[in-house]
Image 1 (tube, rainbow, N blue to C red):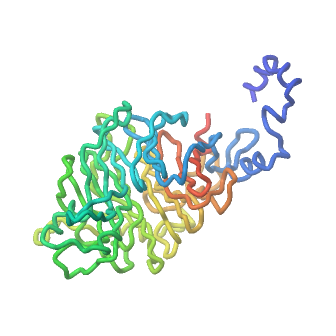
Image 2 (tube, rainbow, N blue to C red):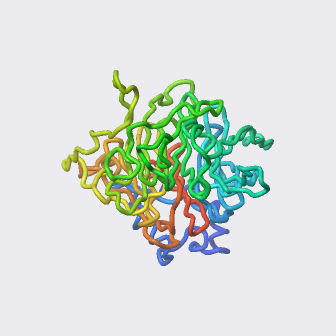
Image 3 (cartoon, rainbow, N blue to C red):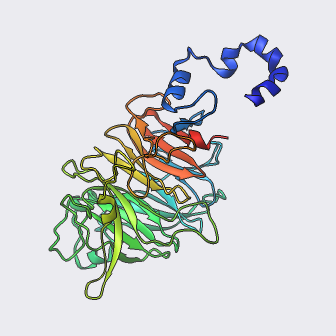
Length: 407
């Protein structure tokens, strides 16, 4: 309130000409009402609740956007039908680079950018092309001199397929659904497709593949189920996130090889899974469930990440690398953004002075075009206490910040 009183003489003439409602909004404005109600903003700035509030205006220069990533170079990367768009943190688009079928984007610590898309390949050299899943490896994205330095193309980028023939329509049906990196610039790529014979020579289509910084396939997440619902599943995987994320620093970036995935098979009960790494003297490195998330402490929270059927059609996941450790999930089935702690508790910590000791639910959404609604949200990212949501059906990027973080 002090800032308003100090500045009142400065804006007095403008208020007469424009009207208070024009400058500051009005309580009769439905958007203002929704922000105050859903964001739990106390008009006296005394917080006894916590929730996400929008940072307006939202960004609208997109055509069917599908994913967003806040880079190590602190630029914003969005993919839509026009390809890869490079933006600054004000939402200004500096460059657009066309990539066919672009769906997902990330960046490693070298400032190399990776985009999941499609590519036309004449596999048999007979003049006809097949449309195949691809991951484009780009440099120069923040400088404006974008170059493709490598392209990982299914099935040729999977070393287990070197002993099998091209499968025609089955291989064309395969999708790369997500891409993320580790602190050492290892790349994880999530893949889904129709061929999931666990007894076959080659890896199943539903899988997470590993690549080194040079683009060589160095392995996959062995031990995950491609066709059943359990706590170590990759059944129709839609998104993937690791614990290494911007901002760039000389220390403090997680070196964990673990990751979180989202799945959308209708029969799967558990559709957002934390996959842990295990080392066995006989079988080597394998991947499995994080059993700690199955413990529901109702004295700390009311809802949990691992509740059966918690999600309908989750499209993406992101892990905040800062002190909050929050896990964000966007669900196209409920048109919502969900937020959890790393213990799997849904909600945020109560603010100082709050009467509650449990996590406060901060998830929100529902179909619509208001500031707290989405239509088919397909991507989520986080940087410096700001959550970015790709609101695909509304062709916009929405930004949010916790009300308790507002200055």
